[in-house]
Image (cartoon, rainbow, N blue to C red):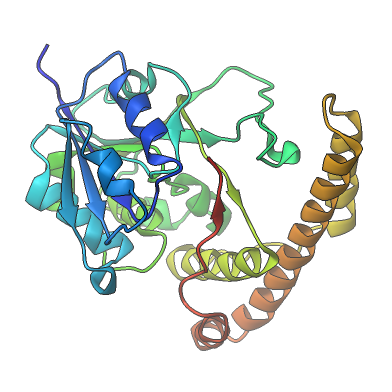
Length: 320
């Protein structure tokens, strides 16, 4: 069977996770044509691991030139050769051997430009038990398409943000669609911005939640705070969306209840993850409150709060 898929992965110092990612891709029920690693000067042995796999091609990216949107465009325009381009990240790995097959099955007609899967948190001692994947219903396939930009823009802001909750940790595109509509030169949320542009131009987008990858970041309070501000700013500028202040006490109580009931955790693990979730909720609520105050001042207020936080969040701790 002729392979239809090129996989593109931005990489930098991923020695602990990249092999599981590559092996998971190579075990798929549908073989890939190539894996394109966009490497920003890895110095930890990542390149030695990549060199073991003939399917992998490495493209060097100067760290000073890295951009979430433009760097991914390099992988598409300058390197990819297949009809479909699949994006993921080096610290994610497929849940099963049918990940690519399930993404491809979402291209049910010629108007579907891209299909997005779902990232989930593995049951592991290194991941937050509160976020462990606990499905309550079978995975659904959802298709969005609008007659014109006006039809989309008339949606409530929360609905617009939901439609464009795109995720390049597990997303496949028609290569032709990306050549016509490349990613914007943004420092964050290139996937969400692309989805917004796509639906406004009449493209159909599909969410196929059965196409799952394992992915988890252990967030510091600083990371949570800055990421929340930055993501909120993009949603505000794209959709006019302003998040509600969370009920932190209720969320912490729910987290503690889950930790107490979860079997297999030691007392130390329960206490450690309880502290983690408490700090997460404090940082998240603080960011939302500050963002809401800034949003009341309009775009200038949002710009000021983002400048204070720094445009790009710090690199989170990865597990693997």
